[in-house]
Amino acid sequence: MTWVLGNLPLIGDLTLEHLAFALPPVVLGLLLAIPLGWLANRTRVGRAIVINLAGLLYTVPSLALFVILPVVLGTGILDPLNVIVALTVYTLALLVRTVADALSAVPGMVIDSATAMGYRPVRRFLAVELPLSIPVVLAGVRVAAVSSISLVTVGSVIGFGGLGKMFTDGFQRDIPQEIIAGIVLVLVIALVVDGLLLLLGRALTPWTQVRAGANR
Amino acid sequence: MNAFGWLFDPSNWTGPQGVPQRLVEHLGYTALTLLIAVIIAVPLGAWIGHTGRGGFLVVGLANGLRALPTLGLLVLLVGAIGIGLLGPLVALVVLAVPPILAGTYAGVRNVDNAVVDAAKGMGMRGRDVLFQVELPNALPLMIGGIRSALLQVLSTATIAAFVALGGLGRFIVDGLAVRDFGQMIGGSVLVAALAIVADLVLAGLQKLLVSPGLQAAAAQRGARRKLRAVPGQTPTAEAA
Image 1: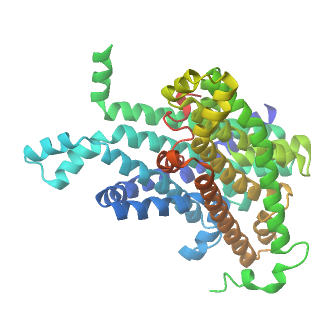
Image 2 (image 1 turned 30 degrees about the vertical axis):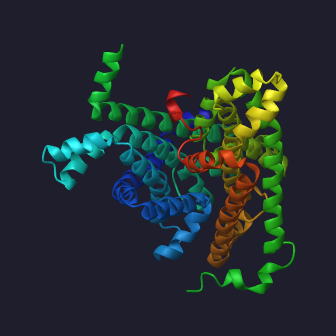
Image 3 (image 1 turned 90 degrees about the vertical axis):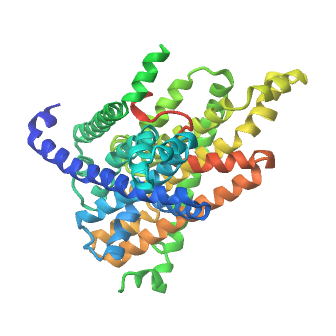
């Protein structure tokens, strides 16, 4: 505990840096996954291509992706952008399938009703299909967010900041307290973000609460 | 673009620090880890799935693992046990057990009740039901769990170069130390290729081992593995 109490400002800075690495990719990945998931849901071939490509990208280990991306992007090897893009790629790979599955699970009757009520395709997608797919998509977002928060730490092996610094520094200077504090912080942040996403999901889908209440 | 020059330089493909040697090391750590993890997780998962006791614990473990930073676990265990093979190996096994456990458990648990009843009706005892009916039916999800574990282990074994383990990760860590970016990129490309090939090999193995009657369901579930550690379970906090 002494190490933690003596280094609170440092821990605060690393936590903020960690969040700046971990959270934007989740938002970016989701924003990209919605149109791509929609596209994948249109045709059988498109679906096969998108799903297989996503599976392939998801297979590449994070440390390798952090190093390969600069070659693709033309960035410097320690440009923070590499981590952001890498984690966006993982989120996208995970969510594109979720979005496709969620959209295909919207009952055809509901879509037909919306069409009959005069909804054009774009508005129908935004006002009917997308909202109805929120519960499934959100489950995927929670997994992506937790993975992202955990994966940022890997970047510290090649010098990126964030809470992973507490692992590399704690190892090199032999301060077990620092390592343990880092692990606990990552777990706590993951738990808090996961809980917030759960609450956000409830707020966005009031109809599921009504249904749950009616069943009781 | 000279980024891939290192990879095609013949001098990097020989000797104790050459690519073949590092590849063999990497595969060795991975195989050893998976072997130990399978020996621990498959019987335990099968037993939990068969009896139904402690299932929530398995699911919680598999979900909680996603949040656990692998680098943190690695440096903590190596700091406690010491540099060498044992420390990283323990960390790798800790990471490999939960997905295999969850896959085996979910596989055995999800076997159609009617199938189990039919087996009992034909006079099979508990042991026969487990080995001849439940486990073969559970194979798609079990192998799904092993594939998740394989990727996790390959990836973490790369990171373990930071705590002085051998393997392909050495090229990334050593390359960084001397600012040899070509070496870092070469090593990364090798790691990525290894992960993709290894996953494809297991996918092929799955096709070979799983009964043709289960193949359709296996294809569906195998792909869903990416989404959730245990199909049909909600992620992280709820279970943890």
